[in-house]
Image 1: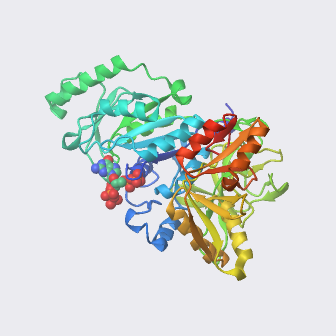
Image 2: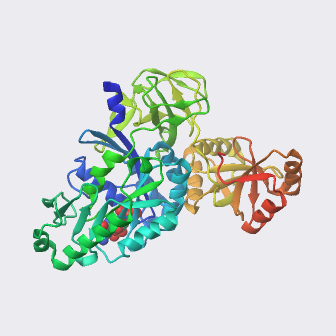
Length: 526
Ligand code: G4P
């Protein structure tokens, strides 16, 4: 294998996702700890927005400011280069998480052992399923009383609609929790719990050894042996290819806070998780090991300092090698650009990089040249698919509150939408502008940023809608009659496509019944 191929093959680019509070931040930190990227846990600030601060916008800003540094965490672990993409902890920024999922090759889902599968997990899993992203599940907080591990496996299978295969197994739980047996490597490491450091451990290669009893007691030793026998009997042998196809999710148990089960997860993860996968462009499939560089912008992070209206555009490299100062084509503009200070994040430090490879993420300082979904290439006309917008869940009319600043408002809305802060629809009936978000906080973000970055003032008017559906049909007559009947509810998205704004679930299902030839899509890509 050439050095170039080896560089790409050793990359593991993934995101950790969870329902808030399941332990995503803690697990991320522990992976960094075991990976040697940090030496003491607790040192890394996450972009988690504390629940108590949700009404305090400035506080959120401060916390979000931190998140630039933690947007991508890269570190070397053994022969592997690991890139963890951070996702916002707050549900109101779920759209950010959806987009981040377009830039990863696999995902680790964290589930709280006591709570099981929660709403946000279900939603994120839908996106993974749509994209056939391989997922690994980490069941966390075994140091607390939780649900029975076998029940949890059934629950994950039923709720997330994916087959499961445990690859580690807990020895009891709560106060009696002793550690996890590594099914993947068929060995047991008993650690002394530590919240901050990696501690010494005792290794058992054979759990049949009577010595096990002296460490974890008779009943627990017997239970562990019985459980493992049952698992090996019930679940088929783990098959990496089935996991890579997204058909089966390996499950690990542990306690991130106490370092239990984390190394088991990490060691298995680097071995089975995919290296950069081919990416589909409109024109053709891009293989990561193609020599020519290509990539797309999946996230734009605004600088919150109003005096410097600059952003960082995050590029996921799809193929080849990215080089500092090399000319690359901004496909939407059709012009060549050079980047003198691309940044990457290694072991928590943001630094300028001279080169990066397929699978890596680089941050490009930007003054408004990029929008989400833009492609950069060595020259080829490529347009990447797979950056869908999802139907927003909250809608409001946006109105100008300062007649002198109409231009600034229009520009501000335009740029914020390009950054992917929310979605803009224009009502075809009355021409009014509608902003759609997944959470209340985003309206506050928009209002604040319009004022501070563009000097524009907006006001919101309530609008009760259920969902936005992108519609299409081969039956033009039916489409025309639908649009006529629903004239007041027809809108246009930023790309000029027809969107039907359904005001209730009932009305939507009636519409689906009455207009069978119309296809209603809940994401912008179909
Ligand atoms: P999130 O990013 O998914 O939202 O979750 P986060 O890691 O912040 O964890 C949420 C809470 O759960 C934190 O407590 C964290 O300490 C705790 N936690 C994480 N892993 C474990 C575990 O293995 N066992 C137990 N018992 N708790 C765990 P908090 O009190 O909300 O925050 P903090 O003040 O401790 O930071």
